[in-house]
Image 1: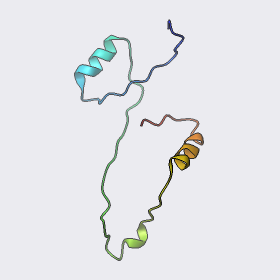
Image 2: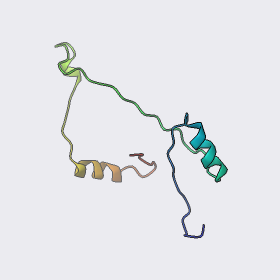
Image 3: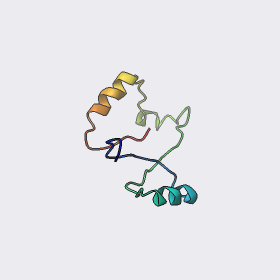
Image 4: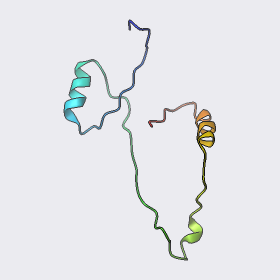
Length: 77
C-alpha cells in the first residue's frame, strides 16, 4: 500500500448490506464475525442468587494491564 499500511480493519454490521457491498467492491474481505452480548442484572437479585454475583470496580489502568496480556486477539471497542 502506498502509505506502508499492511492492514486496515473496518467494522460493519453484517446486516448493513449496502456498506458490506461497498467495502467488498473496494477489496475488503470479511475476516471475523463480531459477537456482541448485552443484558441486565437485576438491581436486587433474590437472596438465593445474591451470592452468585460479585461486582468489582475496575479502573482504566486495570483494563489497560489486562489488555496487555491478550497478545493473540483484537479487542473491538
